[in-house]
Amino acid sequence: MATQSDIAEVISRINDRWAIPKARNGHFGNVLKSLTINNVRGVTEKIEFTWPVTAIAGTNGSGKTTLLQLCSAAYVKETGGRVYKIGDWVRNALGDETPAFDEKSSVSFTFWDDSPQVEIPYQKARTRWGYPRTNPKRNVAFIGIGLFAPRIERRDRLHVYRAQVKVKATSSLPKEVVQAISSILNAGYTAGSIHTVGPASDQWSENLPQLVRNGKRYGEHHMGAGEQKIVALIRQLEAIPARSLILLEEPEITLHPDAQRGLAWYLMSLSHRKGHQIIVSTHSGELFETLPLDGRLLMIRANDAVTAVPRAPYIAAARQLNGVVKSNQDLILVEDAVAQAFLRELLRQKNKQLLDNCAIVPVGNTDDVYRLVQSFRQMKVRAIGVRDPDIGASPSSGLFSLPGDLAPESLLLTDDNIAATEDYLNGITTCFSKARVAGIGHTGSSWAKKVFPSLAHQMDLSRDALADRLTISWLRSNSAAASTLAGDIDAAFLAA
Image (cartoon, helix red, strand yellow):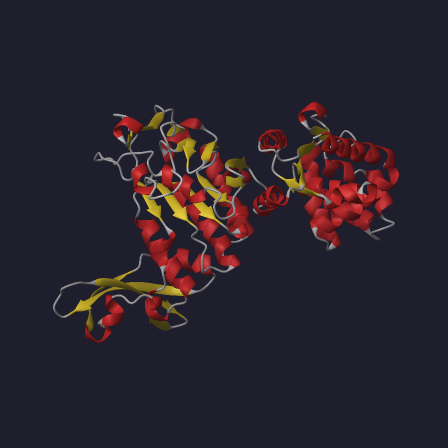
């Protein structure tokens, strides 16, 4: 099974290459940097790809599949000709359907190696998409949900003619494929093979995989759905030419949470080994949150508009943000989970009615808070942002700051607040002394982000529980500042 150390190692190796343009371009090639969509299936948005592996999350109908499909049209094959066209996916309206595009629709791409931008407008007069004459070349592989239905559930030729089928040839699965399957599923497979089977007449043939585990050999019909999925997926992925664009649609289906996490590790490892860019749509928190922040993107559909949230800390934010739009709640955007817990407790003490009528959602960094406040306000959602104190407030833009002059983790981990929290958590002072070791070599907010989870571990508490106790202690000594912020937020919503 892929450990946290394995995951951290592959992320570090990718970052080492990605950070240096010459190394990045040499290893990964002309990877997508951005996709700009203008009025296609109700989506008008610019998507930035800031890492070679990107997980796209969002509720059903948020635009994840549309994004994957449009990305497939970014390149032509090395031998010429497009692998996919926009028209393969986005079709003309049928009957009384609302059109998915019009004369103003367009799609454009930019690339990390500074290849020329590709612009593809819809040409109404020609009833077709206008592809440029020159295009970057790269292999594209689109692997959709429908490719992995369990064999036992298919009424295919192997099922219908099973009494007539014979083994025609056998080949061993490559060692790296068996190892990858073992790592993802946390199972000790020792070997695998592919049987080419078919009737004596040689009218057709099929490939049937087998695995060996605990000394027993069994075929695809006797594998679990997750085993079948991973065997088929890994075989297909390992066969894709180096430096391809791989588009994966919800590959976590049928996999348990540990295997979903293992799959995220495998996709990063594959990208690092072969220089692939991999874009995957997912509903899996395990897969999404195993990737670094630069590899996470949320799609939020509010009314008729779609908003992209880069560097999203949690997949749950997609459900929360969509819920706000549908329920007409007030929305408060913060940077991270510690700020969320801090503000939630502050409002619980100072304005419980306001807390009951709003959702507090962490969305990334200070720039994301600003951008999303403006986006949601344009969609007529009552939204404000509360950022860390170092940026400062801008009430006219709906932006406020947490109290004090430190990021919330640092504010809660001052010596005075730790000592005061001893009233709520016996032994926290001693545990804090041990936890400080995790921050050696770091300063400021970086130090606090290292020490905070270490202190939670020392206290045998979740991070949320620790933040809750530390916040209660801080508020006891800073009631006036807390009341001021709660009043400012309430006034901003009343004026919206």
